[in-house]
Length: 350
Image (tube, rainbow, N blue to C red; front, side):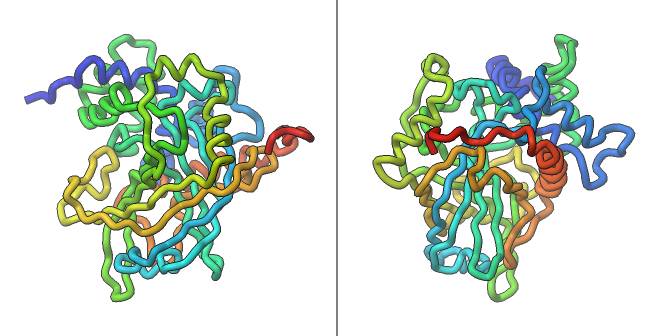
């Protein structure tokens, strides 16, 4: 029996954000032998990420708009029950992070992108690093790299039935579509929950493995705002809001780690795990200072999700490896364009 087509409002929501997350999909879909070079090259992937005017020289090819921050990750020690990673032992660890928007168009107003992101590099005293890039969506749109390629083809097709056909063939997109079309918007980076949708393996001191996902839950109270109202605000209202908020005091999120049980879809980021799964609060992220990205500390950090400390490793989920390779190519491209990257003008706000 064919799977029912997702409701029209869900498909419509997907169409609206196809250019936003579809670009990310393109980047993730390549590498690790999933596609032959004849079918897809990284050069073609990066071309698919580009807005009509082309990429902004020296910038990231997706999530191009953002600002840097410095802060700390205060681990409470609870995570040591799951992983021997030193960054989960009780202590305070420096963070260089990035708040960002899921768009490849640097001129796009901040009220338009549905996807918002939080990227972190947490560093241990011994130099070990934990890098992660999270988004505010609760699930990913599709389940496999092959489906990402199909998504790109449908999103870029001039055939009017391409997206409905894609949605019918990939019913897992309904969860993402429901969030995109009906989930609440907020007017602040600080009010978003950011989710690491990929699964990783934590290994504890006894050598036991645990499949996990993590999230950053805001300590600020989320205030729902209509998307139409956000569209009427200043093009940089998110940047302004987080600066005003931080001037009144630090901004915090609580990191939670959710543990899978046998049978949970560890390799499928389009599927949420049951709410009943064991979840631990393992620490607090505190943002202490913001910097403009030009000349800021996050500018040259590649938030590669496969950079992990001992005690953590990738799982059967194929996406982190794909993201790693795509991020590396994007980094090389923008590094080669460094001379064209703007610097913070003298006297500009930090």
